[in-house]
Length: 104
Image (cartoon, rainbow, N blue to C red; front, top):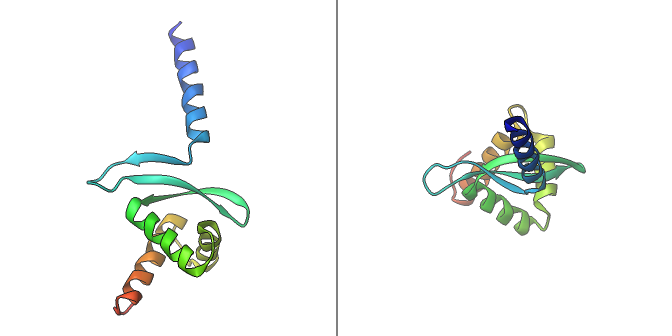
């Protein structure tokens, strides 16, 4: 009986995880880190970002007249190492710093 309940819970959890576009991972202060789905060259992938980075990434994409996925594809093509989430954070930081007149 216990094994069946556990299996049913795992199936339910899997359905929740695969159908959700944003899944909280952990909370730090008022900025939860959230997994978000983007498409890189048509391939579905997830990036894990704090809300402030995600919001700024969306604003940059809107300013450039592209989708977040198109912008993420460009970031993916130009990154030199590390994972995509880190590359997105560095991209956003670079844009914010250059907008405020700070050196890279």
